[in-house]
Each structure stands twice: as C-alpha cells, then as structure tokens.
Length: 442
Image (tube, rainbow, N blue to C red):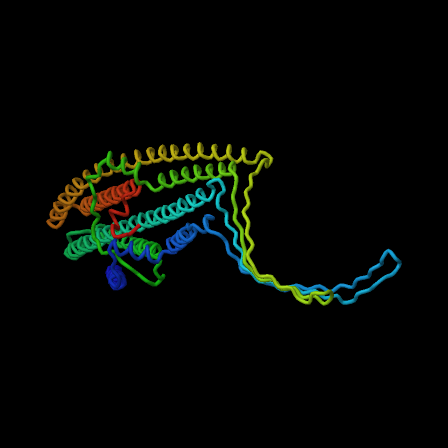
C-alpha cells in the first residue's frame, strides 16, 4: 500500500502544479501569436517589406542634395618669354567656396519605375503571405499539442482508474487470503497487477508533463511556467465537405497563393527587362553660390549666384546583347513559375487526397471504437461483479480490465488522429485561421 500512497502524493502534487494556470485553445493561440519568437521575427520582416513599398524606393521621386565646400591652391609660377626675359610669381593663392542645392530626377526610363513599384507592392504582399504561413503553422502546431495534452490527460485518468480498480481487487484478495479463500499465489498476482498499473501511471505522469512543456515552448512561456488545458475532451467536426475543401484550397491555400505571387513577380521582372528597350529622360538642376578669391591679378574676388538646369535624353544602342539575354531569361523564369504553380497544385491534390482518406478512415475507426468501448465497459462491469461474488478468477478479471484499457486507448487514439486530420485539412484549405482563431486580423 506504500506504492499507492506514493502515487496519491504524486497525483496531488501534479494537480496543485497544473491548477495554477489553465488555458483554453484560444488563449494558447493568442499567447503563442504574441510571444512566439519565429512569429515576431517574420512580422518584423513583413514590416520591412511594407516599409520598402513606397514610391520613393521605386524611383518615382527626385533626389535633392545640399552640398558645400571650400577649396584652395597655392602655386609658384616661372615665366620664360620669347624675348629672353623671365618672371617669377611665388605663393599664388586661389580659394573657392561654394554651396548649393542640386536636383536629379529620372522622368522616364521605359516604364521601369512603374515595374519597380509594382514589384515592391508584390513583395509587400509576399511578406504578408509569409507571415500567414508562419501563423498557420504555429496555430496548427499549438492545436496539435493542445489536443495531444487532452488525450494524454484522458489516458492519465484511465490509468488512474485502473490503479483504483487494481487496488480494490487487491483489497478483496487480501481479505479472502486472510480467511483462507485465496492462495498466496493469487495474492502475489494481485500485487503484481497493482504494481504494473502503478508503474504505467507514473510513466504517464511524465508524458503529460513533457506535453505541457512542449505546449509552453510553442507559446514562448518561461520554462518554469507550468500550464494545463481547460478542455477535458476532443470535439470532432464530422461534417467537412470534400468539394468545398478543394475549392477553398484552390482559392485560399497559402502555398499556392505564394507560388502564384512568384509568377506575378517573374512577369514584372520581364517588364523591367523590356524597359531597357526604351530611351530614358533625366532632369537635373541646381541653385547655388560660388565665391573665388585671388591673390594675384586684377580681380581680388569673384562671386556667382544663380540657377543651372539641364535635361538628358539617352538610349543604349548596344550593350553586348545583355538586354536580349535578360529578356530571354525573364521569359524562361515566367515559364518556370507557371510550372511551379502547377507542381504546387499537383502536390496539394496528392496531399488532400491522402488527408481526406485518412480523415474518413479515422472517423469510421472512431465510431467503431466507441461501440467497442461500450461493450468493453459492460463486459468489465459484469466481470467485476462476478469477481466480487467469487465466480471469476483474478486472471479473468485482469483480462477484462486490460480489454477495457485497450478499448479506451484505441478510442482515444482514433479520436486524436481524426482531429489531426481535421486540422490539416483546414490548414490546407486556408480555413484554419477562420476556424480556430477568427479574431486574427491576418
């Protein structure tokens, strides 16, 4: 009985620890989206893409520079004239100071500026898609571990019930042994069953704790922050529609949207390459002040204040066939991006078919195992009643108990596997966010 007291102590400690912080699935997702380091990094990268998507970065706006400076020179001059005379000037000092504002503006470059801006906007949307992919992956991981925690707690409760039943059977055998109705062999057998059930219960406590730690890690909680889940059962959606899911995949799947976005970027890159076939027009201008000081000559100082401007029209006549090469490569990239879109669709079709089959099979298994569990529960109740009346041996009652545990485990596994298939199908169809966390703004 010391072993049973030890188990009660462990379970009591476990209850005290895990009752401190209870999370439902929504709270787990909210905490994970707020704290998870990968999500915070990808959101910062999305912000960078958003900051880059401005007209100035595309080249629409001019550049304006303010500059100023002071320059000087000191020379010694020797003059030899044709009449044989010479002259010498030493330390001829000339100084120049200037300050001004200069403007440079590309007015037209063959629609390359427009293509650059369109590319920046597409990259901004690509950043949003990357964030959405990371969020969907995190939510799927959190949900998977959350429901695994529920399953492990259900198994823990089942094993606890098994320990209680073994304890009761041991009590009955001990009473019968003391009055001479049971042998020492039967008593030792009952003790062995009780110890085996106790061992499984202790191992399951470790599994529950490890699952809780994994969930806390996904939520980026501190290592000493122990949590428990608020739900005690797994609810299944048995009404998923295959055709509706596939249509949502074609419309909303994030990986497919990303591959289509890459195709759009390839088309924009081709437009940028084509823009080099056109001339360019550039405007430049400036307004400034310049002052010159002379140590020799008739002029001591010269000052200039005014405006300068100009316009440049140019066209690249020949660049070693690089334009043609870039345009051909851009066309090939468009074809490759189209092939990648088709490849992603094919992979999604393959993944969807397998997941749908697994979902259907697990639903059938879940329904079957629920019936098996009911039969096992009835059988065990009858067996225990007969055992108390002395009409059934300890081995036979143990077999009925193991059958019940196995039925409970199979039902729990089929239920959990069905839920994982459901989560994967929702993620594949782009509906995971709306289903598990509809408040998210992404």
